[in-house]
Image 1 (cartoon, rainbow, N blue to C red):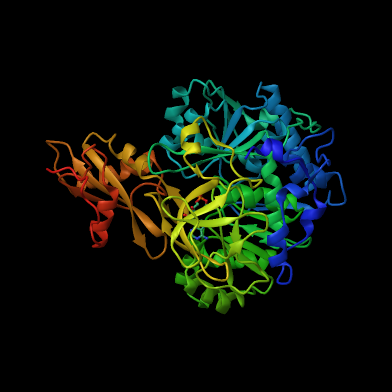
Image 2 (tube, helix red, strand yellow; image 1 turned 180 degrees about the vertical axis):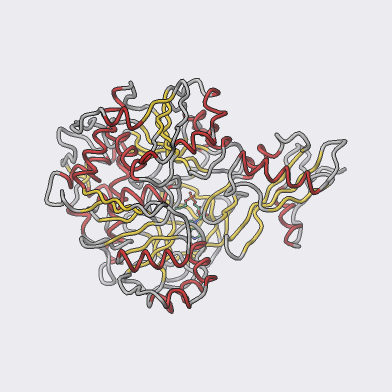
Length: 585
Ligand code: PRX
């Protein structure tokens, strides 16, 4: 379907109807996203821009002095910004970016710790109509280079420490014109200054805080997130400004955001949850959110909930399992009674975790399902709906979810198959950057094929069965085996590598590599350590293999493709399945 033809402009009011126990059936039967679009132009002067919906709209109205962002730094710093202050800060970034020649449609990447300037920069990029590409701050140089190169990024916003980590790649990227270095509060005494570098504090400090947002249309690109597939390097899933409509609606429908909420999303903006639900959903709803620069710590997380009186919390199954592991004595020391709705995404949420949540928080954890490509939540357990522990819940109004057989025909409830969504929802990705074939391959018979296997029960609840491909889900982060294999074979001792996900009680899966060495190399503890170090430096500890097993050779098809499925079956002691294409050696 051509969305450009089908969809006119969205309105806010109709979307404020929330599904509930009484109206869900009727709403899912009758709700059409297209009906929500009217002549209303959200952006003054016409068009649609996420930055206006999230910031300026509130800064111009009664919420202007309401805190939008409450930040806790890793050194105990605390900063609060109202919607009005966010507007000024983002305006300054927008002016500074324009000043150095960045324009509409340019790709501008962010490689930053979770500091307020990340958020100012992100929305500054959107205000000038450029495309924001956030990167996970734990990445090593290879993933950063691959993504900037593929996107033809013209600018990178980063911090002195992260700039240093990827120093070797900057000159390899001819399209990259500017490295904008943010030295928050002078944290770094002597920030590096290469020939492409400019200081954020200098250019933003000199910029005006008045700015007229570029009048982007709903079809203009806003954000790109790289996501992993089975083959090839990660691809940039590109979203349009239009996605805000569904991010806004699901903020109400699923996260149940209300005017006085204090919302906390623990995801990093380098991943899609950290933008769709760590920026767009709460702020388009005018809700105050907490941003924590530090990583996971059970006691500190409970303390944050208590001190900030967090009401709505969005986290991930791995984090929940880590909290479970830390025991129930710790939460008993805190007052967690402010919490009224807890959500999780990214991996299957074990039924035990739902039950555990009931004990510790006095309420279940609500699992929901979506992907980088879907841009927003599509299947959810709602606050008002009885949770079936282990289920991802039921579809949001306005979309159709199907379970398909291998010919992509719909199956009845009760059978396992490919989880697919009828194409045409507002936050649907619009391309993989410069990879049209890969994009087209995801759409068959009018369905978007998610790559997941699932089952629907008689009552319309969906149950996750597993991935249909080799993509690894480690702690909620998708890792493409090819990306890891490519990094490993750059080591001088490695002849070939095959990478799989190995089940893990906390992270769901960990990355395991099987490595065959080149002639003349021997397996030693030193080589093992060196290879581990090599992978972690190039990739990041989040993506690098947790386990490396040396083998004489890897099972391959006759056409030379490494049979990861067979490696996995052998690892798990499962039947080897069809091995008729296996190369004999
Ligand atoms: O395999 C599914 C898993 O995470 C994939 C999407 O990952 P990503 O694009 O990185 O986006 C993550 C955050 C939205 C899915 O294809 N996944 C996501 N949510 C669930 C899940 N698996 C099981 N249950 C879920 N609730």
